[in-house]
Length: 338
Image 1: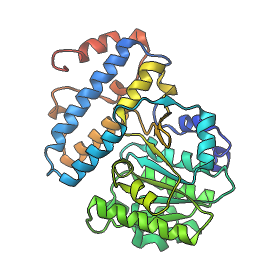
Image 2: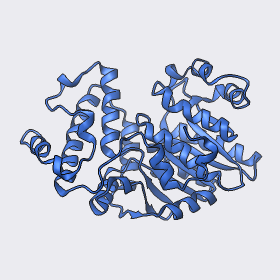
Image 3: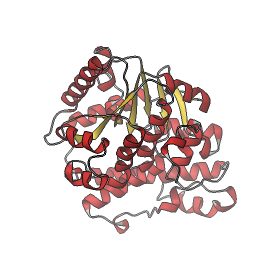
């Protein structure tokens, strides 16, 4: 296991790859394999839509989703070199990083981005979504070494208020402790609040902390629909003077496919610039994100693979060398899959 201290010395690109939960990809992929992956994603999205129809829709969430997706649609991604991205993060003042709750590569990226920001001598505070702000003292005690990581799961009622993977999220707390990074809680998970109200509350909480810590920099890690869109979190923060901002998002599947279609090597699709202060970061490929989210929904609904007409396994979402894909592509590219 590599210690956090040594992680700080790694280039950003190498760090992301090292922390990735995915198995090693093949090198360059063929056009047929590219098409097979896209068909697989289409099938996964159809299955997700089928399951989401079982839940009551939320007009505010739908609005946030549409506004977020519009902000990343039609972008022409420009691949960014590891050195350029590393230098940018090292100097960045307010960094907002999208979190895909069901993909542990996303939580690993939180640690990676934090390590890159800490290359600067200026301090950094980590702002997180997944612990209610009433537990700030409990988190402070853990960071001070006065309680254990194992006890934190029950103390902050993680399973009750969040419910995603403790194994993934707890690594963030562990890394913050080792890096001696303060953690700021700004979320109210115990009660329901509108997305707009939450964004107002979060922005004001960060602004208050920044007013008391003039030299502090911030890494705010939140669900991606908060980060981009008119009057979403980053807009509200900017209006309170929390800028300049660097925004990294991973929920941009068309950006990923554009990059992969050009680069052809999945290993090298890690991050790209979308506009001056907005970057794509791979919080799992679109297939990994959809597969993990589908698994999450299946667990909630009690569904299994037999509930779907098309079977998709974990091996189907992994890019393969050209020699081994033709039969599988033919199976997926059937009339049923279209």
